Length: 31
Image (cartoon, rainbow, N blue to C red):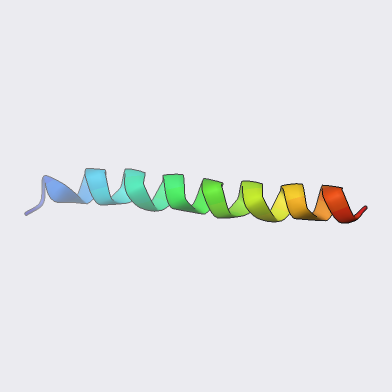
């Protein structure tokens, strides 16, 4: 199970980046 943690971390990181990019693009579009 411990070996799954790195994959989960990468998935969460990718998700966070995706959400941040979406938010950032939305803010730029509004501005």
